[in-house]
Image (cartoon, rainbow, N blue to C red):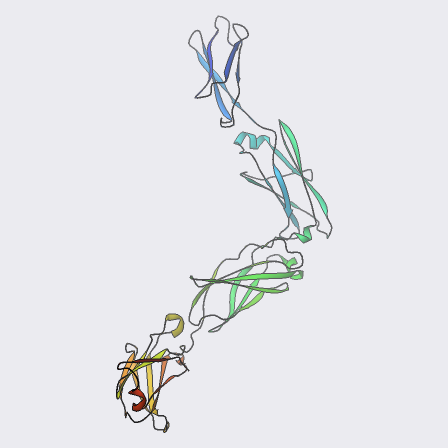
Length: 365
């Protein structure tokens, strides 16, 4: 509507690209504007009016919808309150968020900023029985009710274990402990999943028990770094896994090296004894040196031995070609020596049957 002495010259939506717009003159002072908005149109628009005297003014409008939220689902974390979640199926503008109201069991919900997933929490007296939970959604254009029938004792979404730490650390196993911030968990039959990662692979171990607060992790690599975290769920009425705890870094203690892979090259009387450099997950600590021992198989008590530096990985022996020899190689670190790896060097009559420079490889004993 415009003052006396003026009339509307034009009326339009600012920056609107659509074509389905109709302007109707009701009188010199009253005009109406009808716009059929498509789904791609913004909910906010400015209406601009220009009068015959060149004055420009206008107003803003907001196009809204009745509530269309869906899929109400309720659960509990602390066994003293209920958390209900649902899908918000339309983007909510700030003004609509203010105008939209939520009630859970007829009590107002303070749900905070809303995106695609809504959440409402409420303190409850928990008992082992099914109850109907109703979320009511209203705005100026309509009202909607969502329902979920649930026994909350069967829908426990556990919080993350607290203060996860290693109580005992050994070379190949770790004893793990944690605590609960929810005291009522001490009466629950719980299953917990321990995630063990060394950066290259993950292993998940499951443990069971009432009020479970500990687990043992086995088959680990000595002198190795691991990241460990824990999550749990109820065993009797499993609903979903709880939240993961914070990750804890644990390094296992060292151990003696694994047995070496040893082989030999023979031609006539010299023999070259060689061994693989242990990988990090085989050495279990820094290798100090290697010990090589050899003796005639018929007289093992008269053995010879030498220590080789960690930078050497072979030894050439000149032996009596008419005798059979047994050679043993071990690796040593701060924790001790590996199990011996033994090979047999045959007598010359057997050697001559081998192709010159033939290589024998024998698995560690």
